[in-house]
Length: 310
Image (tube, rainbow, N blue to C red; front, side):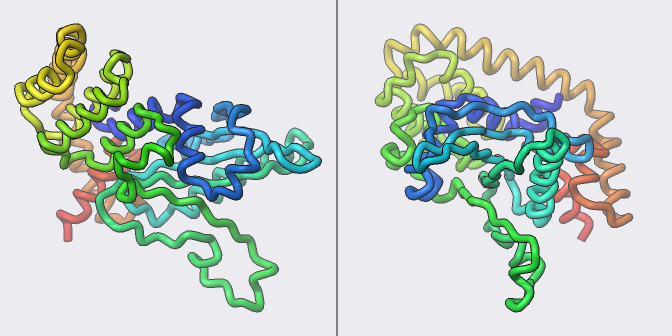
């Protein structure tokens, strides 16, 4: 049931747990002067041992470690990824705590503190109006700045993405398709979907059935497009390649979707109870993230319920 209600998180993890996708994303998003000094071929996904229970519902257990390649001394750099589908005012606090937990690991191991670069990946439809640095969030006077803790994060908004940006992301067809789907989630109509399928065909990605399945399954879970329209577009745009993958696509996307829908129906009573509990906790003034964790409702749903109370 968690996959039904958290398709964005699952899709994000599937996309960026592939080190090739993550490396190409970093090359396209980080400032060029930083990318030039990173050895992206050394990139590895770090285990999430530093995440404690209070943060277990978040995605900042996703850390990429890589080495620098310039200068006399090679050092390790850690990219701390946080994925958001809404403008979260607590982002700086979350990033601060994640970094503290990582530094605490270093302290306990009696090693030098590591270099951490926080990266916020945002694919919400609204404007991101959250401060970009810790200084900005607490309004530190100029005369105190040299004594106060500060950090800022690299921010990427999928609203800035276009399929024509292939050079920016190393012509990585899966990454490009994933970014397009994350950008348009919930509002990708048949014409936009046709454009994406054409891209999948022209890029050669259509030959990789597993990758196409991941992309189309996320599409069907996050957009309201008739099954017949989806099938017609795939057949007309992919041609002969569609004949080989359509039976598998239909079975794995729609049959699994129906099974999940049945399970969701069985748990409908539990969801209704969770919504009622959510309303009560909102009235009591609890934090959005804590309510999400307590009720097992996605943050987007909690925010939706919050709006309905006003």
